[in-house]
Structures are given as C-alpha cells and as structure tokens.
Length: 225
Picture 1 (cartoon, one colour):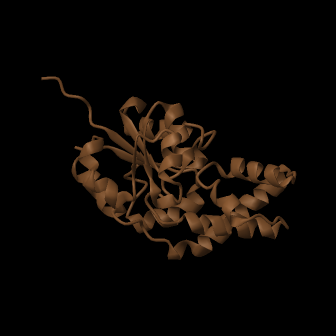
Picture 2: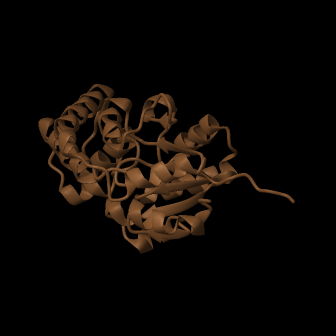
Picture 3: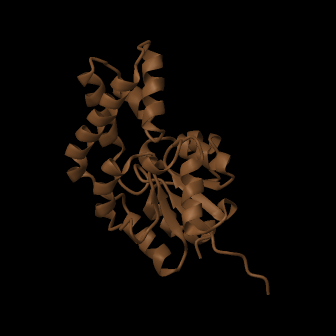
C-alpha cells in the first residue's frame, strides 16, 4: 500500500501562535513618533506581518515621507526596543501550546517562520515553550527577503527536510497567504491577527479558523494525522 508523507505545518508567529499583533502596532507607532512621523494605528496594523523594512517603505511612501538607510535602521531598533518592553504582557493564543504539543506527539513535522528578527521573536518563543535548538525557527535574520516573499517558508521546509509541496502554511495575515502561494504551499488563515475571513481567502487561504484552538479541533481535516 502506498503511503503519502505527512503534512508539515509552517507557522507564522505573531497573531498566529502568540497574541502580539497589537503590541507590534503600538511599538511601531512609538518608533515612528520618535522620528517625528505621525501615522494612524490602523495604517500600521494593515502592514503587520510583512518585512519590517518593506513595511517602513510602504508606510512612509503613503505618508509622502522619504527615508534614508540610517533613519530606517533607527526605526527598526526603536521598534525592537519598544516591543521588547511590552513583551512581558504577551501570551500564547488559545490552543497554541496544545496545538504544537499535539503535532510533536503525533510526529508531524512543524516549524516557525516569522518576519520578525530573533531579538523580538526570542522572548515570546519562551512563552510558547519553544526551544529554537529543538524546533526550526526561521527569522528575518536568516533570509534575504521576508513576507510576502516566500523565503521564510522555503527555508523552514528545508530545515524540516520536506518538500514545500508537502507543507501547509498557517498564518493570520494576507502577507502569510501571499508568501504561501508564491512558495507553492497550501495556506490556512487564522482570524486571531485581525484580518477578515474574506481577506484571507482572497489572498489564498483554502481554510480559515478562528485561532489555534479552532484549528486543533479540525486538525484531521487539514492533514494533521
């Protein structure tokens, strides 16, 4: 009897496994204001999940402000500092620990691929009980381009030793779904980052769940067995 290889799950981090989207939004607002740039919170929220550098470029282009490399680097560092001050308040999303524990216990490959750098991802990984020495964690530091480019997910699949066609990307933002499509992986959307079901489906999600707990309840429907 022929058997297919198990589905591998590639998870975004912020808004997918940990409830940290709005901490990122406020940290970016604080960083921008430190440079005298005032932007509405909703504009920042719509860009969370993509590469920080790309997000800065888009936000400033929308506001008509130009920026040089030195200022962009100050913004990135200011965001990291502001976010890390808030990281103690961040908690895993409902069902996140249980979901990854189930996958591990079932010998289903999984990894994390985040547009954040390790300087901001590290503290919240600890709240999940994830040890990067044991679980593949691909951060912005390790790839040329972050989301919506596919590099993070391709690198995560490579770390797991699986073909990207065997992988399912789980994310909360349209940027995750666009990156999944470009990587040729299936995409599952979660509502826990603030994007709507319609937005996630239009970006390529073939299924949408509320949060990790909801995904775990339906895990056998998406190849998690």
